[in-house]
Length: 406
Ligand SMILES: *Cc1c(COP(=O)(O)O)cnc(C)c1O
Image (cartoon, rainbow, N blue to C red; front, side):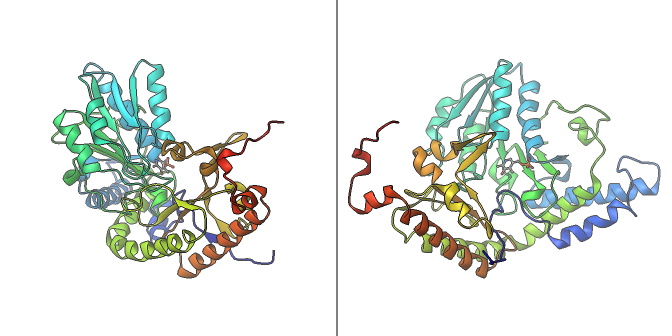
């Protein structure tokens, strides 16, 4: 195909660095290359000042105190430090953690690792919208529960959990509450104090900052949370995360947070209108369903299944021109239907036929119009080749058909 257009609609996977972020970072690679821990000369002071400013900008976006911000290499490390750090530190108090089946692998695999070391983990179910049931959460808490780990917003379907209510239940039961807010920070208002979150992780590269940097908020007061370090060394970051700070990346993360705070409101209005246009146009098609919550959802993301169409094949009709994700995860050799969609109650076929479209700061209305057209054409094309679609159109009840094995 001669169409040279390339539209990026996979902003939930990663975002490009905002040019304003890059500009602030550049001096810290060369002229201002000092080690922020060098307390005895001006190279160190300049770097330390830059780190302090970044800490303040991040704290401001989260409604936290700058001293409550720990720099990490990204959300995966933040999640590991939060969950393992609590499990190690509060071992005498208990060995039970509560999380949900739709969490990111960073959380699920960390919990699995702890289970192998004797921790007990409860994985809550979610409803069709992807929401946890607050009564189920309440009932799951026991004397030995030391942590509730529930994400703020889901990376595949965008569902936003009732974080404030979850926090209230945790407070009533004197259990720590950790939230993986990687998809929420910078996209929707997140205020750790108002919401009652005790530990929160997020990442630079999902908010137009650089890859390989993130931050962990750790409450210092009511409650004062202590985490066992997972990386030992020079005692940086209040002893919770040693290692020379990645100053340019931290500067970038700080700038990204400042911009997110300034632009979130206007950006949300613009992107939600574009997202709603996609929903409106694509959901008009026959045999199409929206996955996850319609209302309690990130403004810039949608996840839609096109029945009787295989998502990976559908993507091949446009993936030279449009980048987005399907509901199948490439695990080494095989195509597995998304465990998030399956947890909502979708069958394998519907999970395999889904697309996640995630918009971002640099998405234009032309991008969206083009994508709608190409996706619609792709679905129609795939269906025109499909005997199953033909049967559906002839009114055959596909659930009653007995498929022969061969
Ligand atoms: C991207 C993502 C992560 C992992 O973040 P990294 O910084 O890439 O390690 C964790 N949780 C959620 C919800 C994410 O979207």
